[in-house]
Image (cartoon, rainbow, N blue to C red; front, top):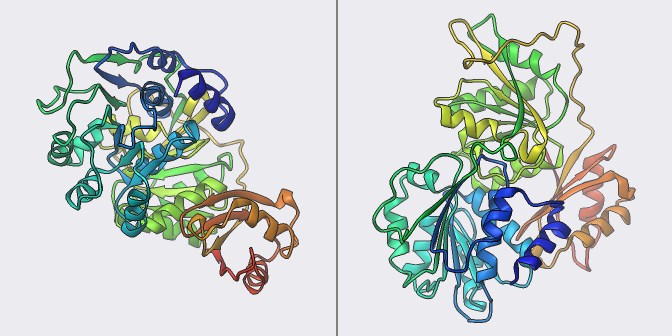
Length: 437
């Protein structure tokens, strides 16, 4: 691909109006560059930046895997594959990650060798070990959120993967924080570091506030804070899975449209939580730091630290979920007795703000079929506006997956709508549809 084609696709498919200085720098990376470390805050557009260096080096005509992108989490793998597919629709891209159907991945690899593989270290190694994946001719090796991969203990897996690659022409490492000394097994010849961490264009536009709780149990204070915030996407960060469940249960009982996200939840349910958060039917997400990076979530307005972040790096990644790509965001630190907000963060007063309950007008319909069953977004819209009787304006975001689809709808009786769709036919066959609650 040519750089200009990638930029055109970014404009048309991802609504990118203008490249940032960081993205321009990566787009103009010299052909002879061998290793680049890209450092920039979460939400600053690193994925597009490294794609502008990676995609022009992939032809898609060799019948071999030409580029490998290693990601530390399933969520980041999905985000990267989605973005690269939008930027390079003509290239075959495979996403390999735990929690995904091994059968579907195997069929995809056997049907036609992908030009680009995006995956988590363990799943990539599994396919290599079973003889399904040959990385010998990879030209571009990218490790996104490289520091996170090391933090999660993937160094040995990454070393074994890298040794399967004969002679990569370009290594790309990305991180939101400064990279330490690199291990000897990385082919980092003449490493060039591009540090945009202090760039005004990359820094999020955030306002930070402290909110005091008179009690050690901060749930009542959280409730009062939420009732006074703009009713837009809000992430409540906690430090432990058990705390996430407790906060989530409390908010649901108080009538807040909330979703739950942590590492012990099944991958399928985690993806559902992200989809309903993204489509607005559950605009509050209670999460551990697993959600601090790697999720493809647009326009998060509020970040709430229910528990204080464990480190400056954790604070950076949590806060980076809001104020992405120049959008404004607000960050709130709930402080109980004996707790203090970070230095420089002052209190906020809601004395003149009236509490407002969060609306629950949007609901999510779950279609028990997806793209692997040849279901398209157009089919879903046709069913909703036809037998379902909805106006097009009542249909929100559609998330189409391999074997399911989640659709936000504004309907007076979502259960009756689901029953009507299940009783009818879509593309000539019955598809089970249920409300996701």
